[in-house]
Length: 247
Image (cartoon, rainbow, N blue to C red; front, side):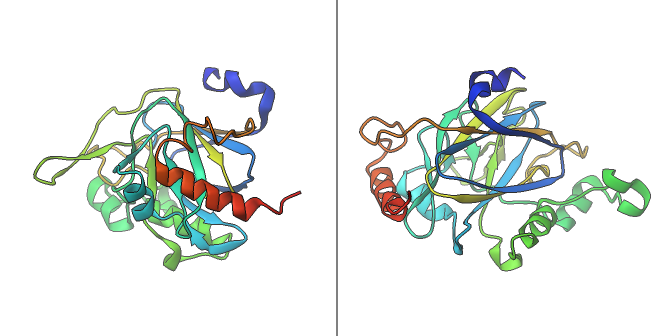
């Protein structure tokens, strides 16, 4: 696949996640997770946790206010609720990833797409993002109380001057990708259910290709993410303290 050619010699794992499925793994510090929108219609909802202390997790308000933004793209860092950097967006061919749209629940799915149950349709039955998150979180001893505001990679939600939220159709393209460098060991929990604001009445969740590869060493003096905002440099310094006793 062309979206992986540039990292083939550094890849340690690759995997395909169908639409309306879930996935999780601890991405170790020093590695990067690449997410690829295979068909140009993926929505990848994400939650992040510190696997050594799952009470520390991705904090949307701090991430956004610290970087004076409501969207994410290259240069942005994803902050934890302890003022540290979990992941950095080091490459991005999409340009806008949603931070405010949330995740669908069962009632939303029934209202928009109708009901398609497992008993009749087996693995083609309709599932919500909330349900998929809960299934995957359970594998790590997590549950409903851990459903904090999530990210939606490959989706765009913008606000009009009057505050009306707008979902952008056809925002991502086939082969588009985003690279997430782990600044600390990070449990990444994903699902590929449709975005809750997607106006389509057809349930066609997009496929995700992912790859994990070895990241080059970070030079804090020149790194685009560390120097993107002064707040990023401070959060990165906090993360270096966390990692200072590693071998």
